[in-house]
Length: 179
Image (cartoon, rainbow, N blue to C red; front, side, top):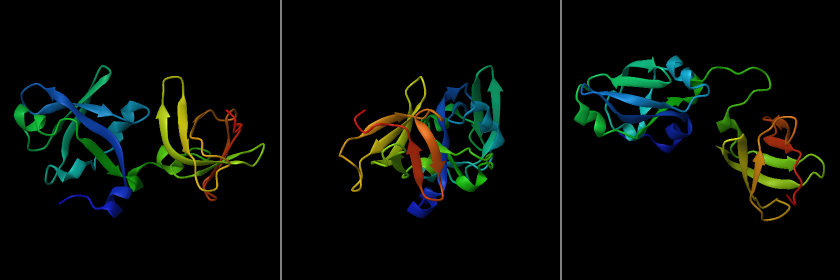
């Protein structure tokens, strides 16, 4: 059974299966959480395309800066190689509540981006990326945009990001359209 589109919209990718570790089915776990240790707070994982029926992580352990894990019922390096690089998901409802003023990245996708100074609509958030120094909003033009330019806007609160209004689905930025 594959995850249908409605279910997939309720999932968030938080890890992937890395290369095998040893011969007994363990693997390195690539955590996408921030901080990475937050992966230890989850247990109800769903594997990409439901490649393993009744998928269950038996354990996750931390060794220095790396994580390794084991899937229940897989005790062989060749079996784990078959699922290497597949993503692991959790239901969005399993994410912890945030403090006031905090947001999850997935909540920003699709929001309208408006320059606070000129009220120009710059587009909608297509994605968020981290290019090293800080996170960036990838903004794609929409039919209401001031122009047809795509933009990368650094996600720096109180600098380029003025405020986020999730109820109105708007991110107010301090970003000139010419930049």
